[in-house]
Image 1 (cartoon, rainbow, N blue to C red):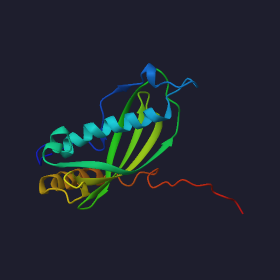
Image 2: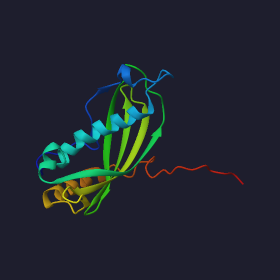
Image 3: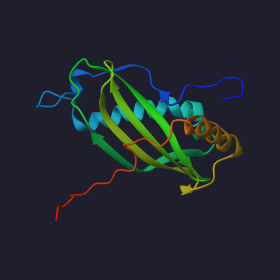
Length: 163
């Protein structure tokens, strides 16, 4: 990410198609494969942030500490989707992302929210980001700040009782 090349916000993945082996006995996308779609988008966005395969050779990686998935609408065999990723926040060792899976027709299929940790693989232990990676996070965060806080971000699991 450089000052001369603005990137669209939020980050958008390449188009992905729902595969036959991902369909469950109910005839729709099995819950595990929503995570696959989110993860594949993350891999594409992580390249921009410097967390690609070469990053492990530097002795670092990231681990997901928490992931919250909300199913909104079913996906089926052959559906084509794109997944967005918005960087919501980061500090010297962690980053918080929000993702949405959108069908090619534009409707929302699912949301995902993650807290990831920066890891020094020699421990492994949580460690501060190197300066170049911290700069990339700051740049992406600045680009994504204009999007505002997503309406569906920050949700929690629980049963709301009346009365």
